[in-house]
Structure formats: structure tokens, C-alpha cells
Image (tube, rainbow, N blue to C red; front, side, top):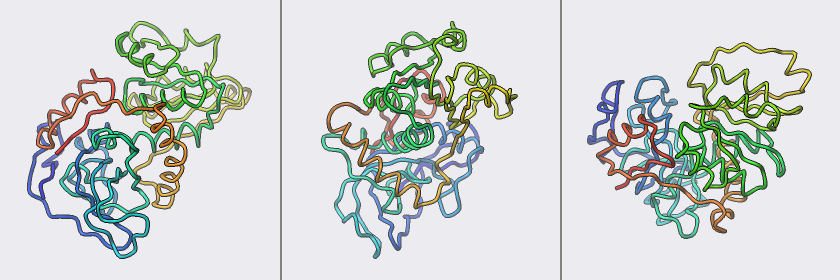
Length: 322
């Protein structure tokens, strides 16, 4: 098969289309003929040498989410059959013509979605549902602050929180991106290049914050959380070392948590997939949540897709297609 291979760590130019051995499947795995694959920030980290693939996963092929058609099933597969169209969360290897994955990490494609749209769903829906609604325990009527509203995580978090009855505030890098977030259901936005979100929200307060920035955002997040507030970290692009005023955590009874998804055990991902099919898929089929595709690229142009992702000018998902 053909696959995008990381020849060496570095910039987008290290991504090369090459011949690569077909995946071998067994047990409860399925083999998917990939029609589309999502492009995500962790793919960049892997390309740069900062996010190694787990054991047993193709270490040179990035890609954490795909859609396509099952062409082969292992002997222990019970929920899917050859010919089923699915999207799947994979631990790597998605930038390829075929990928193998355990069946519990697959989901049927929601009614009416294209392969490209379906490929944009797994990484963000798994991440948002796990961190915002499970760990962050966001409920209707609460105020939710999402840093990076124009990202793939952002557009998913905005729509799901809005659909389930929360007030949504986002931080973005331009007014144009902010307006797009408002169109998706955000109640307001803060342009972090012209405003300090801590100053804007100091009198309003928020209940749940999803943060992928870290660094100096940490203390600002703590300061604006309401009593019983929850701060959830999924990345820390501005730094992992922070100072904390423990007294504020105690007096406001705050919860500080976070997670990574790629290395989580199979049973967790399997159960998470079931919850997403139960809680998120009906919102998609009812038109309350829609995938937002910024641009698609042929698989062979993965380097150009990464250049666009590095640029950060997009709102929505970048997808590789056959």
C-alpha cells in the first residue's frame, strides 16, 4: 500500500508518500480501506519527534483518525462486517491506504455524512466527550471557557456544549475566527491578541475550562473559575511548568485535571466510543452538531496539509482524502 512516512523528524517536508507493508490483523481487529484521514496537532508533534507512537503502532506513519470501508475482519470481530462504512480512532498509521484497528474503536458513519466529514470526528469527539463532559462534568446552565475556539477541538467543543445547554466562551487569535465561532454556537469570544481573557471574565466567572495552552494561562484560569470550578488540561503548548496558589484551589474547592487519549487502554476507548454513539451521534443526525471542514488535500499532499496546520489560519478540520 501507499502511506505517508516520516523519513526523519523535522518540518512538513519530511512527510513522503512511499510504499509500505500492508497491516496484518488478528483477533478483534478490522482492516479499513481508508477514504479520508484527519490531520491533527499531535501529528505535527509526532513529525517533529515529540510524540512517539505506542508500542505495536506504525511509528513512521502519523494519523489518529480515519474513515473508510471495512475490507477484512479478524476472527473475533462481532459488531462489524466486511463492507461496513466506519470512522475510527487509531493510535497511528492513519495517513495510509489501509489501517488496522480494534473494532471497539470504530463507529458507524452517521447518516448523511461524507467520508471526509466522518474522518473529522473521532479525535475531537473522543477528546471533548472524555474531557469536557466526563472529567469536567459540564452540565446545562454552566459557563464553559474553551481556549482555541477555531481548532478542531474547539469547533467540536463549541457545538456540543451549546447543544447540551451550556454558555460557551472561546478565546481566538482574530475577530474573523471569533465570528466563525459565534456562527457555530459560541455565545462570545475574546481575541487574545487584543484582550486579556482574565480581565474580561474576572467578574463573570466560569465553571469549566478546557485548556490546551498551559504556561501563564494556568494562573489566569484559576483566578476566573467559579467555586467548584473545573480546569481540564489536554495540552500545554506554552509550557508545562507553572506556579499555583494552593489557597485559591482550597477556598474555591477547584478541581484540576487533564488527560491524554492516545495511550489510554483499549477498554476505555471502547466504552468511550459507545458513549459517543449514544450521546453525540444523535446530535449530528438531528443537525445540532455538524463537522466543519476547512480544506481537503490528496494523501500525497500531506506536507501541504501540515503547512496549513502549522500556519494556524484555519477554522475547522484539515482532511486528507484518497
